[in-house]
Image 1 (cartoon, rainbow, N blue to C red):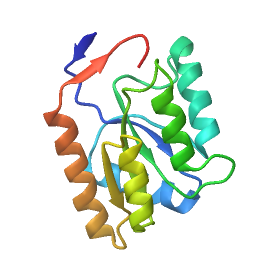
Image 2: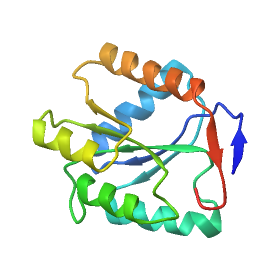
Image 3: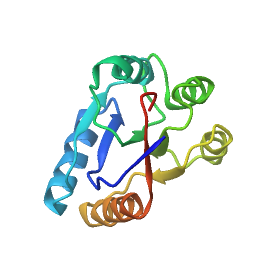
Image 4: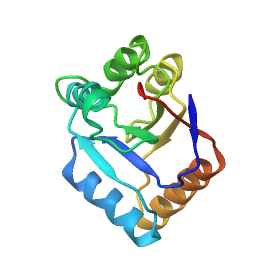
Length: 149
């Protein structure tokens, strides 16, 4: 295990909604938050990116995963369960970032060891507050960098 002092907020964004992706990217840019964003349209694509990344470094390390729940093919809960079951990937930092405020979704996300659960904000001002909070938390944490995430 190596600790990385990089403060770039690299993100694997697991999100199927193009508008939500654009709003998040615009919010990060407006706040001047540096880092790379790699997008996956669903859980299967995210697992492919993470598995491929072990060999190709598609995703800059360290990184956070922002995960939507409601997606086609493999939803966020299925992805999180598969991620936590994979020895190489189980320690990844995952924040659920979704429109669902359903208690069952929140509970299931934490049962699968999500690091946080955020309901997507309805305004640009609230999105900026959330992104600043995530970035501040990211900057406060030490980040593990290894060959297996």
